[in-house]
Length: 630
Ligand SMILES: Nc1ncnc2c1ncn2[C@@H]1O[C@H](COP(=O)(O)OP(=O)(O)OP(=O)(O)O)[C@@H](O)[C@H]1O
Image (tube, rainbow, N blue to C red; front, side, top):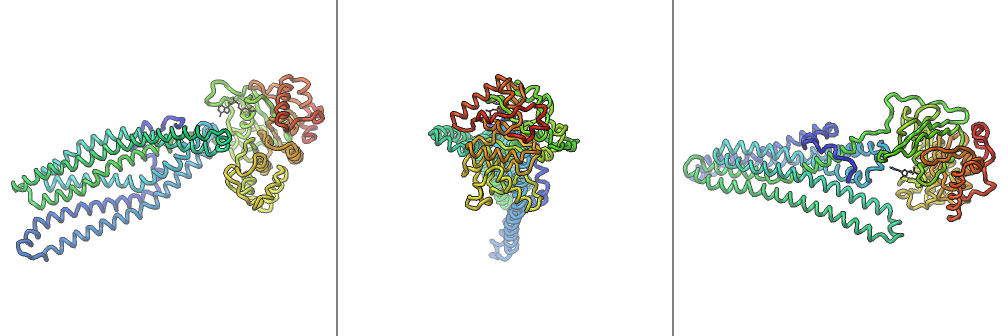
């Protein structure tokens, strides 16, 4: 189920659907023209019984007596013309509404995708992918069908019924009243149906989203499921969800069939009563035979829309649910937005950008206590700082505060003296690049993946040079051996590549824009020692002038840094060189020993004794240690 309460739950169906107006506005002229065509077709259909009445009461009676059927030519031609007009108007309606419907759907889809891209990570933490997928694909498709068919059909049905009943009342008096009396139970049933149906429709759309989520999760985690032989469990949980959805669909169909049955039965029952009363009225000469024939012909025209009312009403309620589900996402405010009065980025010093975490506090929205408290951390310009801490201590969270993937809940993160919340997001993006341990690569060529953060406007030759030098630094030369070299499309999330290969492409992507600040969240964890050493050596060369924060899970990753910051119990408890901290900080010694045990267990990344850092006073880091030895 989606994590938030439905935004439109308190609105009436009309008020809910009215929220579509901004998206539908450009399509309104064609939709209105389509509606007018549909109304024209419906009025043409209603006019035919009027001609019939005149024919029966006038020329037909005379023609039968005189055996002169020529008088029928005109009425026949008129009926024919009305029939042709009705067919032409229906065709015109379809042509008119086809294109605006698809345009509205695609504009809404783009708006939602843009908003999803814009929304803070905290939103994506809470919302399952399948729910978003079902909204952006299923719900919007449903809305398009309603706009081009359901909405017009609903209006046309109402108008046809109202005009038709008006005609019945004027042509057949009492008979019209009998037909009108049938409208009372129809209205009551429709009202009760809509209340019940809306709840079930909402449930079914949400369950469909959950089902999409299960498919997404199990396809995404297919290797784990297969490796652990858990396919059956996944299947049984999926079957449970599918069964739940089936039950809801049955409930929906049952509710709908009762409604359709009632809508079918009531008008036909009133017609049966009307036949008896109508015959008596003709015998009594209160109405003519022509009026009785016209009554039944008109009632036949109205009965279609009355029966269809059930379908169009349920379609409308589905559309309303789709609108609510669309706006639940669109109404979610972007909490990591551009400031209203942005500041210009600060000026980097001669050695690069200086980052300062000033008394930072961070609490996840669903947590009761802050994960990080009173974090004071300087990342001197051009230096590399390794962040170490026990698992779950909040290293990744802290790293995500620098590129503003999350906003601090207290204190500030400053780049060159400016709070990142006062900068435009584009400026933060230009300044900071990130590589994660679990790299996401997109279904695109290696080139496109690596150049993702590089300014498109750069000359092609410059982009080419950046591409190859980034591949070189990240030791991702294997891409040249792929079937089409850097043009090779790598599969969804780079599944066709090994973990280490994906990490190297992600690292190349992070360094390609030559960011002033680089955040590396254990980006070399899947590499073997030799490759890690080669990558580290090349990184040392290019990282001069870049201020880096590296989260280290392996002792060898610590080797990348000028200095180390220790995160313990939500605070930075020590900052210094590896050697200093080993000598002075028991918690650091403990962390390193656990990392080394881990590394020994996996046979990778152990920090050799002589790999220890040179003596280095943290105060001197800015001047001395920058790029000196990593
Ligand atoms: N989106 C989230 N919402 C709520 N809590 C979260 C969220 N992400 C992480 N946490 C919690 O915050 C804590 C710190 O997580 P984080 O990933 O920052 O730790 P870490 O030090 O990087 O861990 P590791 O070394 O295992 O990668 C964990 O207890 C985790 O459960």
